[in-house]
Image (tube, rainbow, N blue to C red; front, top):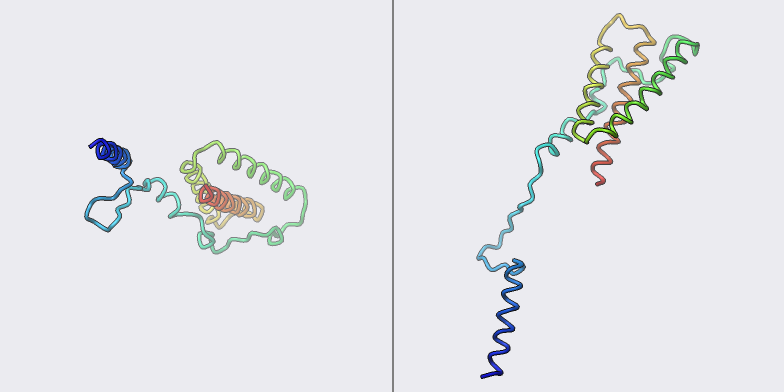
Length: 149
């Protein structure tokens, strides 16, 4: 009797421990149901990323397309663009991923709307084209770093 009592208590204890961990699937169903829920913020974050088709038709990304030569004005604009890029990087780093994504898209759309104005000088067109390029690069970088997590 003693020989039967000890193994019974041992087996009952093992089943109690293993059963409380839910590692033994005893239900009659063979299908698995995922309890992993993707938040709405995550799924909304990647559906509207900036794509090359979002650029306007008159988008000219190169400096060669600017009708003016490399003079003082274009040098100042390029310096301003570099400052804008640094500012964009620091702003994106200080925001969470969703807010940074929204900020980048708003800046891209703002420059795109300004480019729609037909009375824009070539230097201002160059400036806003570069802002759009910076936004595109920042958005892509943000998405790549978020996917890598």
